[in-house]
Image (cartoon, rainbow, N blue to C red; front, side, top):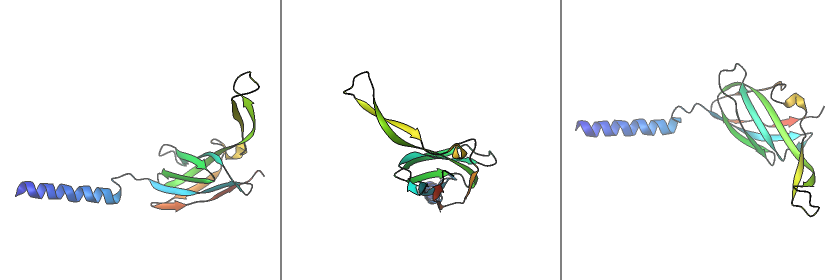
Length: 135
């Protein structure tokens, strides 16, 4: 009888842990990123706790969309985004193979150390769209 109660209790606790996220304590943040009104094709977004209380978290931006898990709280947010400006040969052969030449399209004011962008992340799912500007 005692063994059955222990197994039942463990099963209940395990189920409760799965429902509550097992102490994961991360919130989802998702949305779109535009630069001068156009979706950012590829890049990265980074969240750093404004008070330094947790490690940085981030993710990729693909076709203007991102989805990351970060701790709740006030966050500093920074971006990188590149676009292809041409191509160059990987070797000294005019027939290639080639790779795209990428340049950063986001001004330094959005970079890790310089960004003044902030977002307060709350528990659960957060929708946050960004429209960055070259001005």
